[in-house]
Image (cartoon, rainbow, N blue to C red; front, top):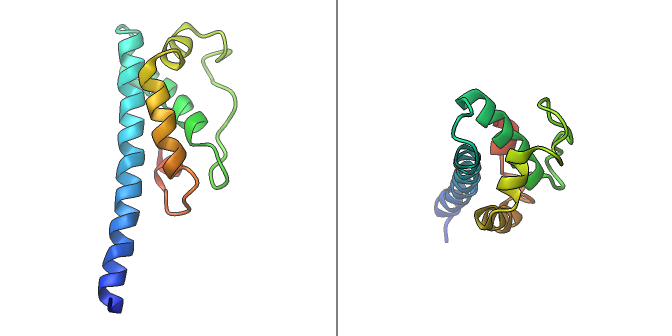
Amino acid sequence: MNSVSFMYLLLAVVAIVNVVSALLWIRLLMLVRAADQILSFTTASMYARYLFGQVMSGKWFRAPTSLVLGNPKRDPVIRKVIGSAQYQTVQFLASFVKELPVNVVPFLV
């Protein structure tokens, strides 16, 4: 394998990791919107940003532990999302990409 193909391989790995992270954020946003249909997009994105930060917290990314909307442990939307089976799938997939240093999506969201 020459150096050019190795660089393309590394670029592909970085792109795949970031695309998977972006898809996880979008999935969390859809879970929040499904939990409460009357939420505005701005409020739903705040919930999704909080949940995404909690899922992606690890060695490279430290997420805030509080939410502007109130106590996250008592919030019905967050409780409904965390209790869903799809959230468990998001957590499982996030466990693969959250510890990689090339993952820049958590810093951009």
